[in-house]
Length: 476
Image (tube, rainbow, N blue to C red; front, top):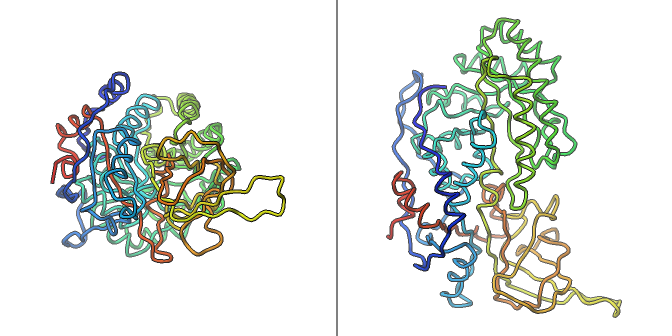
């Protein structure tokens, strides 16, 4: 995979912080705009020497840099201070607080729990530039699905050897640009893609994607991507006939996977395909076990069970003696629990009822939407749990939380219980880091949420020693 600089794990510091955390009280300060690091030299010979394009990802296009805040306070305390120091009617935007401690904790947990699988973070999950800088600085690889994602991580100094272009269907122009940038590791799952790669990026190192039929993944992948084991043999033969280099096998069990056991069958299928590929003469040395790992608060036990199943499957099907490097594509795992969103109640009404024996539901309208951070509510709102920002011991009432747009389907939480709340008060939602800020739309003209950051003093000091996210840590 090429030479790379890997920063030491910060796990010891994070675990120490979690055991001995002392509340910091120095408030928050404004931070300067985030600046990208310089690019490193290209991994392989480019076709045409071109000046790298400027990079803008989904977050940086609309983030208000002058509004970024940083604090050592805990997330909820930080949010209460942000809201409390602002006139009740002046703070209009929802805002995230990103817990950098949590990101570092997850990196350490991954490395301890699945030590053989190097993480290649799935950028599509959350392309926040500060999170990307932290992950890049701590030595992670990156799973990129588009040219914008590739250029975003390369603008942080990430070497092409730390990128897998993990989209089985790629634009021709993107293949040309990937060639120029030296990004040569990429996936495929059909004959048409092989012909395209042969014509436009013939030096690519290819990873064949297998299909996984997993009915227990909320967002299954098998209908859209991946090939059967039988088709895999045909594709390997075609790749050999086209004189293309196939270096590995990959699979993805599906996003929001509910069945850790799905990895068992996928690893067995991958081993059979490895053996077939090696019999055809390919030097297969890379196994990519994809994503699908839970990262929300309260689900660490599910991840650890998943890790045990993966480790057992790797020991059985891919022992060290088999000579395979292993990577994975976690996204949700690293960022979901680190992001909490804080939303303002901008409207309220009682739902009309013709049954006086039942309590009337409170309907709250907040300054967020299923067209912005809450797309998950369109599929399943079980994980979406609103909580009042300010402590409230009042009785709970049946409630509905609606989004801010004029669309009737913009319902964030259909059934919940909340205390009596007033317009101008705030609700927060935890575990909002996955597939939220990257799926914001401008529907109805409402702005996306601001993003603020917090870290404990011990983690802040660790980041300063590594010279990471100094633009956020330093006072403007």
